[in-house]
Length: 455
Image 1 (cartoon, rainbow, N blue to C red):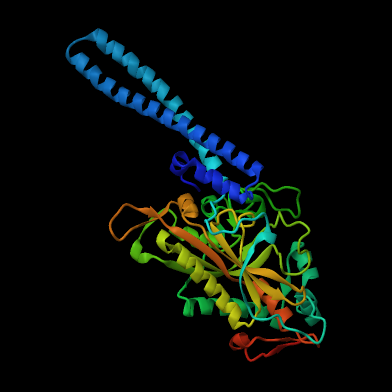
Image 2: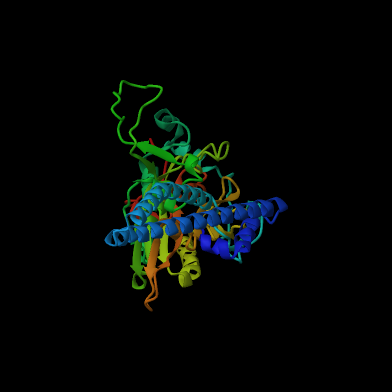
């Protein structure tokens, strides 16, 4: 969330940021100018109401004291006049307070819907076609046969079952079993071991269900509510009698996390850290849940885009001065696990039109998938500045003793376990349909070196 003081003092800054996100089109600039005018109008109205309210409160207090003084002087007329004035003020104040709350609610609603401002070095562009390649690692392998896509490999092994998953849960779910399930688990354990043992991240086992304010803090709400899964406790007193058209849930609903970024980042919400505690580096391997409301028709086959998937998340909480450096470090940590698996990939810097809502700057790591003959995203590392911290009221106290400042937050995949499984299956597939286990994962596979078709 943006600072209204910044918008009040430097409106051109937000106008330029939003115009850049809109690829500097005339429409984007006009919309940004209209939004800033609306924000400043709400801010001015709020400040006028607050001044009026403060004046009335001050007058009520002074008039109340004057009543006592008038009575002490036995000036009944003046005392009566002052009492009428106080009564009128008491009647006006609740109305003013309600107006202030309504304007503040409108202002907060507008501010919550505004994306973060891109950093100056983010490339200008409209969509993924304008992203800038930063680096590459490895050379895509060549095969003496036509490489298959991961779902063909998994189904051929008899260990990847989409049909049964659909019976259980519907589309965009999968049942992995046998050595393939173990390989998926091994990837998550391997990523955690590298990040905790070599990169200094602290492992966390967070809740998978969170409240509204946690989702708001990392900017999943309100803009992306249709991409989330909402749960409820019990049936609110209704009797369960089998499938029914509607169920009355109670009011205490929780959101399934779309990524561990949500609980990990919110660990510092509504707190003031000491500078000595920073940087704080956290990691978790969790199931993640996304409704994929905006992905209709995309990647309908396979494990690329699922409602439930496993991901190792990296989160950093740091000072403003260190956030850019921490972003590069986080990217290097995510790259390291892919290098250990000897998977070919490239890193791209997302352009202004393709970056996420809460991001100031994002690097995507795209792994090479031989079966698709394409690079596909496997990690996204973003620096958010103080955008999330303002939504969470997460601050730190500088060592030199100045007043509290907002922390900077960063998040990244280190990496998506399901997509890593996809990459391993496609990269290490053999002509006979088996899959070689990458050397880095052998300690996690109980001596298994080759995944073969179940008998």
